[in-house]
Length: 521
Image (cartoon, rainbow, N blue to C red; front, side):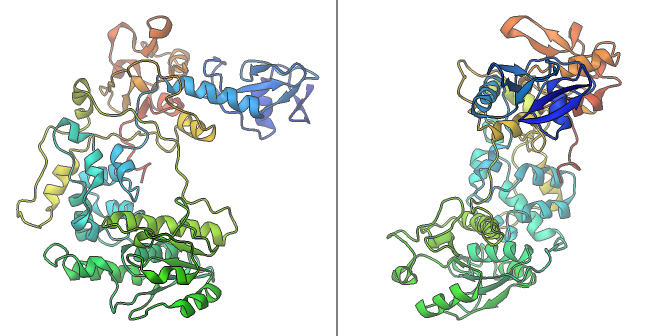
């Protein structure tokens, strides 16, 4: 056994133990991308750099053995900067979207690709569960949303965008309402002023967190401007009322015909743990509430929606006039998260946003690659015409047009996780036109996307160690080297026995199971 110090704490390890393994034995997570527990070190990603406290030099902890008397630092500003640079070099050649463009463009940040896949599989009820994680009024928004998500859809470049709004409307109309799973009652109370889309969404997501919500509106019925300014031909009141009732059934207390003046607002601030201002376009009374505001609306933090008064938050048209109901609904969901942070004594920062790799528009050569996971079919329109929605068959057909743009490893890609942790800039070392995307889908269970590969060598070493006849290898030399199958064989021949192990070992989304539907629900 040898003794060394890591972060000023002594540890004894067996002779021959790498510094990284020694740190892991102390519960210290040294980031790595090319390391695999069943393989020898490869030292390609340079993410596991640590510092020799004696001479101040950085070294890769995966390939250097611990030595007696060694003093190691695993994290400081210099190490963090070196890791950030290592990530940015890897990202400079990494081509792929973490989140699909539609997902990013949706103001409520709904997981549209997953909704599409579930509809395509005929899993309508599960699809509604996905939608309601982010959108409290799917049947309403499916009728009135101007669909910024469709404007960003990659399928639009190929022919026409996927009919996302009609698909959302379909699951809102036709699916069984998912069982509402609420957190245990916390004893906390929040008042929401304004029962339009923003206030309704805030009330819904707060109530699901176990916070008792009282919702106030000057009108007799909830709904706000979507009730009064949209024709019933486009948005029937029975559709609106049904979705509002589902929100109120979570336990939200609604009080209509209740105008809030300065005195009642002051009482709310003291009798409720937090207050959400979500009424319509701001009027002269706003300043009387003691909130900092401009002629456009209340001033609030853009991420948390917290106003100049600590326990008061503002969303929707109270911030600025907007006709985009989906933005208001998204803010309602997000403010519930911020209020939970506030009431839990956490820093109030709002919903976190992960690092997101993006490559831009598809080019002609990539259309056929993306269509491998889709169907060659024009956009579906409801046969009934007018303001009607999809039938089940039409919804399935349209959902199958989705190009599957999001990454299958979106939740567990180590490159994404560490890029977020170290605030990496994907464009820092971009010097040339991006590589064209290809998808190798000939394997029965896997898909390989070479442009997402960071050449960590895990798949190459695994297939060699486990005796695959072909496996993966390095093809080419220098900067042009790529990981692929030797002798121009396809992926099915390369991975006959090791497919699942290789997919699990890949630190990015380059090699993944084709069907991760269950894992992503």
